[in-house]
Length: 262
Image (cartoon, rainbow, N blue to C red; front, side, top):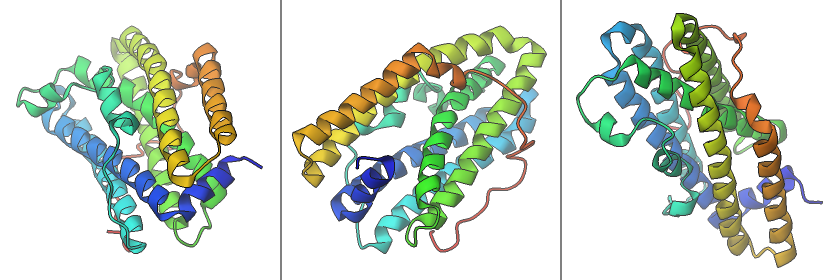
């Protein structure tokens, strides 16, 4: 039976597919760590209190990258090149999701509008990350090799999502509500398309590595297109709603370390 669990189990059991999966994940997390670090350094003076939370967010992303690299090292594997069509973070940036790297590489302070855009983009992408890690947690939380990593990263992603909700609500109450809703909608519609394209590309690479028959690959592709159709119709709305989270001040403490991984 074709299921999320059986699919990921196949990827996990094969060294080549596992190395590709971890390399894609590590690359994206490391890029996110760099971006958050630069944003924290360029936060405008009026929002300096937010800098420590953005720094914490970046430290978590860096930690996740180290964890995925450590999972490969544990199996005697080395990172492999990430195919451009599977690079979710790079494709997001190319499509205007996230602050432009040219801006982050300069020394000019960001504006409040930049911070609002950053948080709006993060709210959408962290929704995806939280859901993906919850799926892995549901099936692999007790796995002897990856269970602890899955639980740790899942907790962090939930914290990131809670932080985005709380901070965006703060900015909405300060008068940025319309800009937030407009940015959230634009970002969500772009993200679901990019996620579809990246998912198709990743499954294509995994299929070649694992020798999937055409029928299986076609079925998986159909499933990805069906998810996109649902998200394009209505599912994107879950990415743009805002509510005060149960986890308040989720990034108000220092980042946790990952002993045993890195």
